[in-house]
Amino acid sequence: MYIAVVVNLMISLWEILKIVTISFILLFLPLHHITCFSQESSPSVVVGIDSNGLVNVNVKLSLNEGLHEIILPVEPIPITIAVVGDDKDLPLIYEEGRLYIYLDKPLNININYIANITIENNVFYLNIKTPDVIELRISKEVILLSWPEENVVDIGFAQGILTLWIKGPITINYAIKLSTTQTSKTITTSTSPPPSTTAINTYESPTLATSTATPTFTNGLSKSMNLIIIAIIAASVSCVVVFYTLFIKKRKVGQSSILDTLGEVDIAIIKSLEARGGSAFQTELQNDINVPKTTLWRHIKKLEKLGIVKIEKIGLQNKVVLTKKIKLT
Image (cartoon, rainbow, N blue to C red):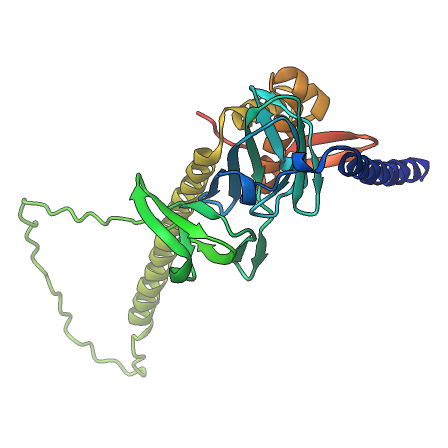
């Protein structure tokens, strides 16, 4: 109970500090240092939809010294935002779709994050808010559910990736294809002639008796029932074999599609968790994997979205638990 109160108090203090910091920056720094890239710069904006429906956004732009206000083209998941300049993570402030960055010298910067998309009834909704021209890269597993003809500036296709240059604002609706497996049926024919069989019918002469004759229907009925039972068993076994084969193949296809989305940092996180018995604190993973803290957290959240890990809050620490075994080799 006391821990929850302390955590809530720290969150409140952080929000107050963030507002005060933004207000201080906006009030005391010269106004001409504030830049909205959609007006004064020419950014390169690449939005990629991968085979799982996740949307990764990359913004590249050159900024001068001073404070810059950047309006992001797509709403981000705030904890995934990373700003890099000179191969270093830069401090940032995010507030309601706007990113504030202060530079002490001119820099070429990269902004990377995972977009906050909406999913309803297996349909994904990607909302592009700014009037910039966006390079939209669409994986072959993605099905567009609308054709934004009036907003399309150009179109291209290479290595299974459909690329659209689209002018915002616009909402893109799409879905993900179901994985399918094809099974081939092989029929083998034998060239050797079938063995000849000779049917021998035995007739017995009727015997006269004084007792009442009983019809012999039981043997014929039993044989028919046996044939039916054998046919049912054979059909059941065939169904089980086919179902098991399809299940295994579908599982392998699902595993390979997930592996295609994993990068070096993702694989390093999974191996570190396996080496530590299936779970580890974020600080332990940080010690095992030599990447910036924000980069590590972004990849942990990606693995959580893929259902490979789950994040448990223990006190003030994040514990990462491996929930799905991935065959990496």
